[in-house]
Length: 318
Image (cartoon, rainbow, N blue to C red; front, side, top):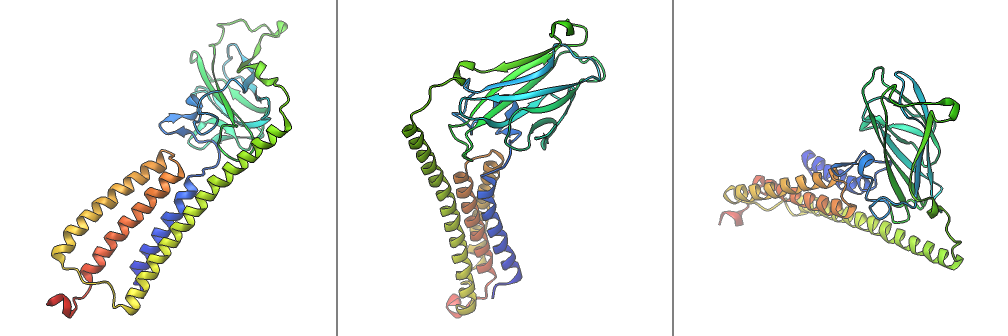
C-alpha cells in the first residue's frame, strides 16, 4: 500500500496537472499581456495582434476641461461591420474616480480601471474629477469587437484611444453651442460599410472556423486526457510494486545522494520555467509540456528518496 506521504504527493501532482489546461483559458480581460498593460498596448491574442481601424471605438460625454469634484457620464461604444458586441477597458491613471455602470466592473488587478463584466456594447460609466487641480488628466481606452465564436482569433478586431482632459479654466466649455462635451473616436468609418458577402463564402468561413475550433479544443482535451492516463499508470505501477514486488529496489546512499541532487536541480529549474509560462500567459501547449516535465522530474526525486530508504535485499549485499 502507498504510505500517507506518497498518497499526498501523488494527489498533489495530479492537481498540478489539472491546473495547466485551466490556466491556459482564462476568463475576462486581463490587466497585463506579459509585461505590458492591455489598456496601453492591447491584447495580442485577439485579431492579428495589432490595432485595427476596422473597429471604431468611441467615447462620448467627455469634457474639454474638468471641474473639480464634478461627475460626468461617459458612453463607450464599438462599431464594426460584422461584430456588434465586444468588450473594453479604460483607465485614467488614478487621477479621478471611475465608477462602473450596468455591464461594467472594476479590474481586479487595478481597481482604478474599468472593463466590461460581460460581452456587450454602449456601456455607460461615471467619471468623477479629482477634488483639486492636478493638471492634464490622461486616459487610455481599448475596445475589442468580437465575432462571437468563443475563440481568440483573427475574426476579432480591437483599437486603442489615448486622450486627455485639460485642467479647470483652461478651455472654453460653451454649453450654448453644445461644445461643453465631446465625442472622441478612433477607427475607419468607411470600413463599417462593406459589400454583402457571398453566402457560400460566409458558410465556408464558418466551417473553417468550426474546424479550427475543434482542432484546438480537441488537442487540448486529448493531451490533457493523455497526461492524466500517464499519471494514473505511474500510480498503478507504484501500487503493484509495493503490493506484489516488495517495494522499490534498494539504492545505496553513495549513489542516491548525487542522483537526488541532480534530479532536484532539474525539477527546480522546470518548476521555475512552469511558473514563468503561467505568469507570462504562454499557450496551453507550453504550460502543459512544462507541467508534465516538472511532474516527471519531481517523480524522479521521489523515486530516488524511496529507493534510498528501501531495505537492502540479499542480492544487494553480494
